[in-house]
Image (tube, rainbow, N blue to C red):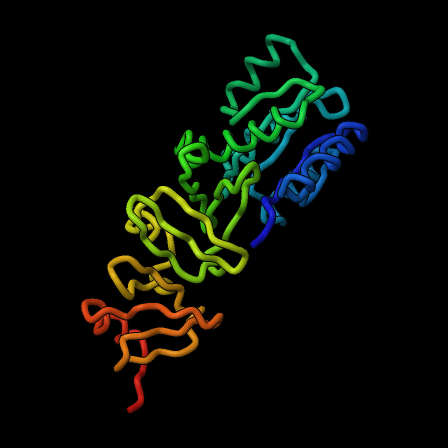
Length: 246
């Protein structure tokens, strides 16, 4: 399980320090800080970023708008938030044209910033209200889920298996269990099909976590010794992915 990676485009050291004081204590990691447009683009293209916080003005010039336009039109766009001290109406209109996922005025307060990040991820995934509804947000190859007051980022490799329980899915991971209101079919749609297989109508298993298969006993043992049912309905299809030596 990795922390949510944030890139900050900001030239004011006090504002950078304020962000560095808040974000790492709330399950986020500042992957990089850039003070210029070129540095920002270099970091954006070289790092694995989930979201970007952009100051509109760098060294008294509105290059944050240029940066937002460039990352939006790139081959790997990410959600971004403007964090600025500018209240100029013309600047606001120009910034709005970039379609930011939120727009905050300095100085920020922590709850407002954290809420803005949540909304940005939901809106980028076109799944507004997901976190309040206990739904995961799927972006590229990651799951974002709400755990209490914190956001958690999960990769497919973190997941051991998923179990259906009524309208909920229990996502059992290396770091804990997350109860989500999402269908198993939706999880299957978002997960790598070569890595996750159904062993039962209510179970989806990460094949990388399988330790032993007992075909005669209709049983699968995972690496943490968790036992998973291999039902007759899915047994034949499941075993086609393996060479069974008798």
